[in-house]
Each structure stands twice: as structure tokens, then as C-alpha cells.
Length: 259
Image 1: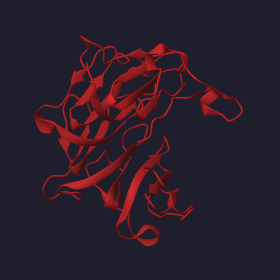
Image 2 (image 1 turned 30 degrees about the horizontal axis):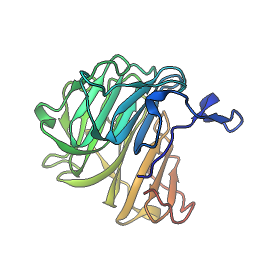
Image 3 (image 1 turned 90 degrees about the vertical axis):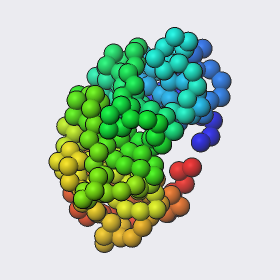
């Protein structure tokens, strides 16, 4: 991951609005930015640094608060991998590669380590997604399992157990969730693309037809209703679907490079 600056673009990232660099001293200098999330109105943001801190903003990215300072629940440098935010920006969930899963219900002011019970212990967390109200979550482990929660991350279900459609350890790379948390889509690096229409209870392998076979899937995104999806392959193509992943159009572009 290259050193990047967070650039705030007004009006929901509209090209017509223009961009400006945040002036807050809290995020000055080069950092290994890893992931960022935004509320539905664009006012609240949260961003994480690989081998660094977690930051939040409640003024469209103009100023930032360091949430990993001394005395905080997530103090110190950590290998933050991914972060998700509810539509109102109050609920957050973030994961550490080789570490733990954390949630916040007050915009990032306080955090709770949720790595107990089913998801106890450090894991190579790779991705996390959240429903619009923050109630439902899904998280994936690289070289591990896929987990879901329907109580704001308090408890978790292992969806990769024996007998499941996605049983066993897999190199999960990315995950996406619809606004209501019912529709999910997940991809495996060096593997397949899967979708679920019941909150992760059952899964369907969609790697047939246009997207058949093993691929180095890098990322996936989903519309709020779960109907439209787009997915990209590292060193390969970009694909789109308009029917919940049942069929795919593409390839759209060649040689996507995500790393």
C-alpha cells in the first residue's frame, strides 16, 4: 500500500464540486492509509493506517481526531486492515490484520474489543462490512472463516463451519453488504465469488459463465438494495452484475492493479 493523502471531495465526491486537502494537524504527513468509510451524507468519516492509528472526522474531513492516542481503547500503532460505518456515522467496526475486531457505537470515541467467543483470539482479519443501521455485520479472515453478527457485533456466527456452503479456511479477500444486511457478496483471492440473500446463512458459488474458474479477486462492491454488484480481479478484469450476482457482464477493463 502506497503512502496516500486523504483528499476530501465535496457533494458526495462529485467531480463538479472539486477537492481540497484537509488542514488538520492530526493527519499531517505521509501515512500508509489502508481503508476509509463514510456516512451516507458524507459528514462523518473514519480512516485507518496500516501500522498506525485510527482517525475520525465529523465535518466532512476538514478536521480529524486521533482515536488511537494514549489512554484510548485502541491506543498505539496497529495493522488496521478495514473499517465500516453505519449510514448515520454513529456505529463503526474495524479490524486488525493479525489482531482483533473492534466496534464503536458513538462515532469512534470509545471502542470495544469483540474478539471473544466465536471469534476469540487474534486473526488475519481482511475485510468487514456493515448494514446501514449498524446492526448487521460481516467479517472475513484471510486464510480463515467468514463470520456474521446481527447484534452490532456483540456475538458472531461462524458461517464456514462443517457442512456449510463455504466450509473451511479460505483466502477471503473482500466482502460487501446491502443496506438491510440481507444481501452479501464475498470473494476469495485465488478462488471464487459467492453471494448470499439471507444474511449469510446460505451461500451460492457464482463463479460460472463469464466469471468461471479461480481468479485473484481483489475487491467487491454492492448497491444499497443488493441488486447491482461490481468486482475486480488483480491482474485481470472488472465485472458487473445487475441481478444479485446471478449473471455477470464483462470483462469491462483489462489489467486492474489494486496493489
